[in-house]
Image (tube, rainbow, N blue to C red):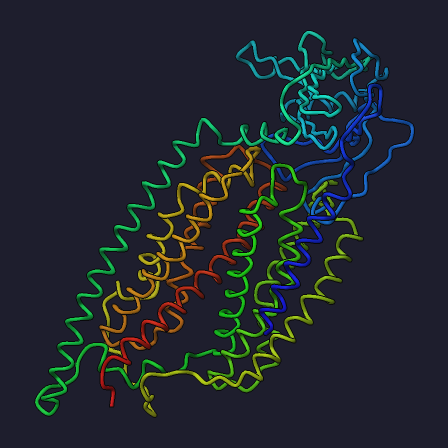
Length: 590
């Protein structure tokens, strides 16, 4: 019942959210000479996507009264801070060499701009909701000695704008190195900033004006290679999984035949293998409250991922729908907290736990706690750097209200529903009073080697796709091929389930009955592999640098990897539980 209510609320919210996006936007129709909204967003080093600053933090020409655009929650979380830009780009009005302003840059401002140019600072603006970018200047490296580099600041911007009938279709910005000012030396410089505009007619319909940004991602030049790589990786992983499943089924069949013969001559033979520990295999794990909290949080994150994919596949996250993904993550996580409460509490009571309220609190803090601490640390860094990643007090208050008024009540309601469900744990065999001693096992049967083996195969299924995701999240590429990502995610779930079941069988076959926590650790070990890939990507595949960018990258990626650990660990345990129940139901355990 709780799940049905949450799904209904979620669909209602999504439909209202989609309506709001359409209703708040104008019809984007203009007459000749009409004012078209132009907003300056932010500036920052090209290679550090998290390190962005307000546009007027640098000494650009600014209007007398800077007006900030009211932004939604997701836009603020995305680091967008839109303000009016001084350029007058009226509809279908060509302009040539229009003076924007004249400024005398002090030595300090010259040094600030030179530092920005040396770090490849770019600016981002929005014209009629169309994003465009440009660089502030360039470094001329004609001589081998870096100290002799020449730093140029662009002072003229040319706008090429395409229109169709009464609508803006496309905007491009060009900077001319010949129209620049030398800021190599620390001295006052007089600069006159200017711009020009050219309007051109196009046949591109308004509905397809965002297709340009799709093509600037990995399409179309990488799409065929992308599909081929993914298909190749998936086929390889599925073949390995198929071989593993075939071998496992054959071994199990032999086990069933053997144990059925053993039943006929039980007095003459001693039980060995996984049947020998039938009295211990359903013995509840240690730290059952934490165990149940992991299952509850992992189930919630899995539901969150599924809902996000659903929205992505129906086209909600079209390119540069500002902040839509962040809004969806916050809202859907809040609405799915009831799933975590219900799953954790009901499973905790099945494990004969008594303090279900404490278990509910632990479930609520298991993922949110580390994420909140990470956010506080990174937000403090952003405040010190005066970056746009620092959230305003009002936004933080909104998030706290969502947590207090939506997340927590739904978590409690889910816990109460789980408590009232009164389901009992379904064990295929009766558990003995005292546990059997686990025999001495070789080192490769230990937890860490088993985790390494279990995590490698699922990670190999997503390895290729990780590069595209990282280049989108921590770069300037645009990810639009959600169908591929969804296929890879489903394969990841399937492979994780299969490999964890195999590891559980190998563990039970050597009479090690403590499989509960091991199944979570083996299933979730892919998250650890992803974290190691983060380290590799940062040092080998990216040009990110600086304390702030490094902190943001590893801070948030650690939380994401931890979320994957909880989610895939839950998948691994659920698959192992089904497997264990099945094999022990197929034999006589008494």
